[in-house]
Length: 603
Image 1 (cartoon, rainbow, N blue to C red):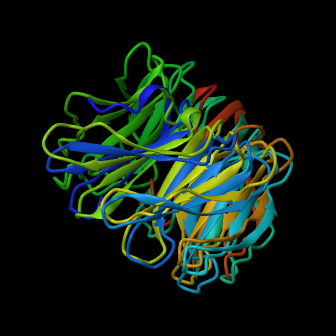
Image 2: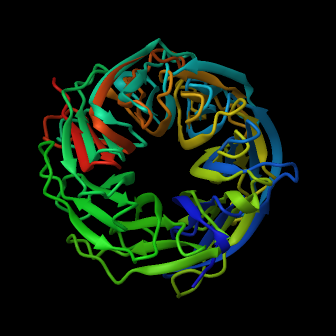
């Protein structure tokens, strides 16, 4: 059983083929050990690991994301450091190793990172949430692994927790959606396609819902992006179906069970029926909840899979880890004092094999991970943030047991990485990793070498006390370069870093999610069919889902706000077309009310 080390506390993970070997690998954010861990894959379904030791200064990695920032066809990593307000960029090599490249200052407490091309220059940019800065930052990438200085967008009076990047209004420009904790709204920042965003559009979700996590997909098969949000405070997931113009229908909620506290949310077709399903990590009820979609924007009642009495689930993801063309469920577990990544391998008809658990190390506390191919072997690898050891673990797929020992990459002392994302930030066809480091308030980028190893972490500061909690990668400004959007929980904003396509990013552009909003989860999608990516943000502090509609050049409009149920504390959000009307809806996991809540988008 691969370990993320003692007390690693894996809290977030992502999946990707870091070695390009055709097999999926796992990257995990280890909150307890200040690192990300990568479990590299080779054959079925084992991994070999390496560690990226982050900067020795007092940093806690929070979230990572992988993308090719320097256009070398190798994945790089961006890591957020929530306590020191930086993001680091690590450039990847073809063998899946990484080297630290550059750091960027962010807003206060950078958490979640997202990547996209916000300014349509074909270079990846970065968006990162500044949770304590009530904003998100945008770093525009130059395509060589460097970025512009951040541009900050206020998320309002609530701390952003999650950020997603996608084109919600179908204008071919990426938008940002920020979920704020502490209010009932999500904020959508519509991108202008030039790396800037319109003022926030807020969408009410449910009263006291406090969104922590956002996911994006087409839940109702109308070819329009929808949102799903985890609302921790009200124990629900929330669905917001998109109209395709950056606006959404009224929220629909689904219970995740009494006192379940849904923390994170992921979407995918788990039973191969052509409709998007939802998986939720229920932290307090210690199970994974599955809502099977009917294709019309509605879902079945929750089916739960127990994860163990000592589990504390953090990030959840859906991907095909073993190259059998069937989706699996991956979740990070920070319980038991020994962090791990747990995988439910899918059979393809809604059933799963016995749970496989891979340790990320004692006290590693993995908080965030990404899944992609770091070493160009066509297999999915993982990069995992280990906050308390300030490392990133690279797990490359290897041989025939579930996972081998992880490769860890430090995200810096006290960096507490909470979220990871993957993308090719330097355009070398190699996956890189971006990490949201909540403890050091920054984003770290690990550029991949294509063999499952990574360069030294490059830091992008999110701003003092930003506490980045969620990171997402996409091209927000349509420059064909990946950008990053991050939810800065404690500064109540989302931040966008525009990628230059060389593994570097612009300075963070932030969007407020509202005073006290505490955005915790972000999903990116084109909700309004304008070919511009929008952002859906779950704000746990204000129990709101915010939808930021993308305008031109990576700019987002003021968010629309959707409140979730009273005191729901939405921790995770996602989107999908739940009612098959061609418009994306929003689903939210409500931590405190044991519900999932759905917002159906009206056309």
